[in-house]
Each structure stands twice: as structure tokens, then as C-alpha cells.
Image (cartoon, rainbow, N blue to C red; front, top):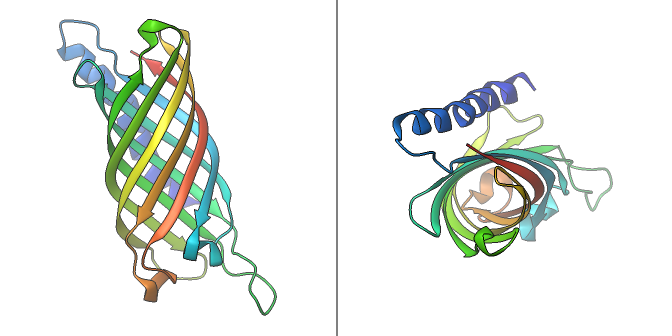
Length: 192
């Protein structure tokens, strides 16, 4: 847990500080948003043979770059119990950390009502920490997903976010050469 805190604390601090710096340098009020979310991460295909679905939490930042286009940076942290083994018992627990930069397109704009819909795609890295194994394994990853939101107010958006993350992993290290893990989350985004 201490190692996880060492990774989460700097990301959280950066996510909370960066929008203020951007807004301070802008002459207009920026629609930068910070989000927090929680949910479940679901492994599929080969990685499901070693890890069960597990709880997750995440943080993110979104910065508009055009009328319907924005960039996002998301970090999600999933905690998976080891899957049941054919011979009985279960495998080791696996923590999976997702670090993804994304380009998002707003399909439904909240200017037309309270609902919004963004689709996104991106790339980054995923880290696998296996209980009982020294160190961790980090691999390049890609992402696709969406965020369906409801604007409670001008500055608060509640959302549902299905994402699909695929790590191009080493089969000799984690048992598959493409680890598919799907973060499904609900959360809140605050605009500054």
C-alpha cells in the first residue's frame, strides 16, 4: 500500500494543481475539469485466467483544445484477486495501474441540454504488480472508451465511463501478450 501511495500522491497533486496554473495564465476562465471516479475493472480474455474483476478508483484532468475536442489524462488503479486455478485454490492478487493520455470528441454537447457524451481514444502504459513477485511489469497500452455525463450545474458533471485498455504485455511475465482490462466507473468532474 505504501508503494501505491508513492505513485498516487504525486498524480493527485499534479491533477489538483495543473488546472489552477492553466487558469491563472489565461485571460478567460478556462473550462478545465478535474474528475474522480470509482468502479470495477474487468479483465477479459487471457488475463481473466489469472485475475478476477476488482474494485478501482481513478483521477483525471480534461483540457479543451477546440470546440468539441479535448485532451484527457487519466490514471486508474485496479485491485484484482487471483483467479481460481484448475487444480484448486486461487492465484496471486494482481494490482493493475492504468496511465492513459486521450483525445476526446464531444458527440453530444451539454449546450443542448444537461446530457453530454464524449468518445475517446488514447495511449499510455499499464503496470502489473503481482503479489509475491518482486517488482512490477509496465507495458505500452492503448485505450478506447466513452463518458456519458449529466450536468448537475455549470461546474459539476456526473458521469458513467466504460473504457477498454489493452496492454501489449510479455506472456512470459504475466501469462498473456495482450492484457485486456476494462475500467467501468462512475464519477464526478468539477470545472474550474
